[in-house]
Image (cartoon, rainbow, N blue to C red; front, top):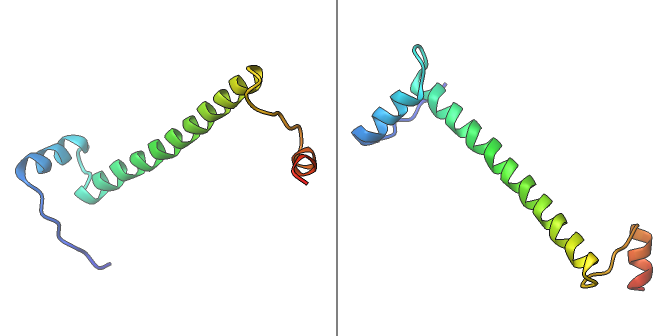
Length: 79
C-alpha cells in the first residue's frame, strides 16, 4: 500500500491521539473520524428531508400548496 505523509501541528496531533484507543494507528483514528462524519452528514440530509416534508404538510394544511396523491395526478394537473 502506498502511503502519504501529512503535517499537523502539535495540538492536532494530541487531539488525534486523544480520539484514539490503545493500539489504534493514526490511520485507524482518522478513518474512524471520517466514517463518523460521513454518517452524520447522511443523517443531517435525512433530517433536512423530514423538515421539508413537515413544511410542505403545513403549507397544504394552510391552503398554500396543492396536494397530489400520485404522480398521475401531478401529470394530469400540469398537462
